Amino acid sequence: MQYHALSLARHGRGVTLLGYLQTKPHSDVLGNGNIRIVAISDLRPLQVGPKIFQYVVKVIAQAMQLLYTMLKIDQPSYVLLQNPPGLPSIAVAWVVCLVWRSKLIIDWHNYGYTIMSLIHGRNHLLVQIAKWFVWYEKLFGRLSDYNFCVTNAMKEDLWEKCSIKAVTLYDKPASYFKETPLELQHRLYMKLAKVYEPFKAQYVTESVNSSAERSAFTEMDDKNGCVIKTKGRPALLISSTSWTEDEDFSVLLKALEDYEQYINDGVKLPSLVCVITGSADLGVCLHKSSSGLDLPMKVVDMFGCCLPVCAIHFECLHELVKHNENGLIFRDSNELAEQLKMLFLEFPTLEGKLHNFRRNLRASKQLRWDESWDQTVLPLLRQNE
Image (cartoon, one colour):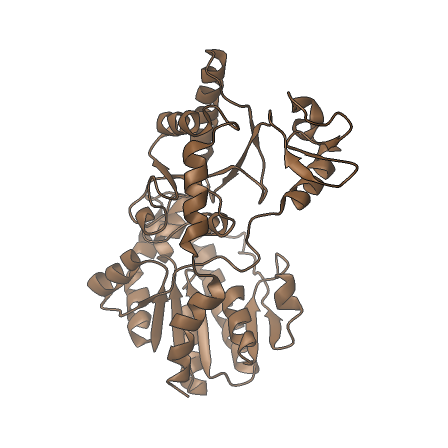
């Protein structure tokens, strides 16, 4: 939603951004004079009575709070909201649009009950009730003026199951997701080496310049400031996901254990350093879509940095990750371990598929968010002016 707000502001439109302030908005949002932030209080549920009663009370309180807040702002031309969460926000937004004679736009990322199932489990009473409330999402999806969704799979699902006509607006990386220059990588590694042991120079097995400033991954000639990657460097692995259960992360842990066994068996493989950074050699994504209809934003950002990925399989992942073209798709820890072995064999002397994947990502000239938004959303807004 912050991306939407920035895109609207970039075209000179005034934006009122409503939401919780549990985390700090992006600095570009905070510094944009066309964007006004209106905070909504995160209402804590009553600790009285059964869970279902607490949830109902919270939904009612949220609806009243949201309705009051939205009716206080200046009259908008459009109300754009993301679903989920849609209860009670979709109904409230629809009522506000009736009052203001505004157009309602819904940006579909999933269904409410599938997200709740990640937290409570599929058989939980709240999830079953939320599943029954799919009619609520269907109703207001049909009543809205426009609908966007994040995959073609969701577009088809919305039409087949809900008779909702939507336009696919893929998540795209912002312009600041890009490959990190080697000099900046070196500065990062040297900073991290002061705190974290794996980044220190003792991990280097071979050096070109004995007087160079070194990290485990790079070294800088102290005379001319030239930075190179060390020949004996470990591999940098970035792992990201939106897991909610321990078994999701255990897939990666088990694969790393199998990878270490390959090393113990004498296979020539580098040690792996797991870290969250834009300077990695490989990304591993453990995101599993609750509905099978959305895509991992984390992979989108990795691709923005031309970073190849290994991603766990689900139904529509092929719309983003092209197996053996920009990354690999695995189904379990054993398959991931085999992929790590194959990708890092003889690393960093021979980077093989890793190099090919990165080259393909560079050559793809993928759209950035601003370009995609201008092609998909902007024409829709202009035709209604």
